[in-house]
Length: 290
Image (cartoon, rainbow, N blue to C red; front, side, top):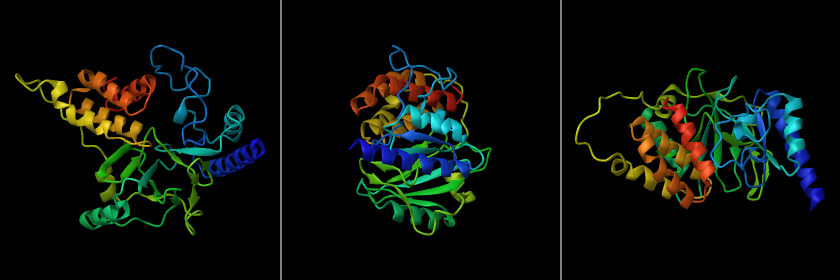
């Protein structure tokens, strides 16, 4: 078994280095599709705001690099890694991932086609990665001035978005669910530019600044839909649903009052308190509330 794991790690490293040559920043992943390196701050009682400033590996997508030497160092530190993640939102491609899920019983490809017809856009020829569950990851390039957040089901049921702060499992990765592979004829393509109409759907609306009004419903009561959204998350959606809900809460001025309830919901669906607090803090920073 150890020989098979070493072979899988060697293959993952080779694929990661190849992706880095195309300008894609990568990190090693474990068989669970999670970052292979544990946070160096995991024993701290409070979540750490560190995004790698400490100089140690283990900060997830913030470790992502295109430097071959750095990538080899990360894989050396994680000899159990069998895959690699590609960071989204970083130059030069500012990658956006359209994740068409098939596990939830929804027809995500049909939902995307319906959106395309309704909003008059077409998905250009680009990299498409087949997932072990039968889903598809569509790679698109965003403009450098756009910050596309991660989301789960916001665009349409079964369609998740990987944007700034997120990552895509790279083709050639081996996970406990199977192997990710580029769809025939797409591996050599560069990520195509995201159609403007689709980009508008993915871009969060500008935050509205309204003066506080008297006799409004209690913030926590107003946020129960967001809490339920997190509670409905299944494995693979928990962190992205929490991040999306926290962003919406901060955009509506109820981020701080709702943080504890969102954390409790995240704990109930399987995240650790540190993971939950860190994700909520990231949402606060993204929405300008940190």
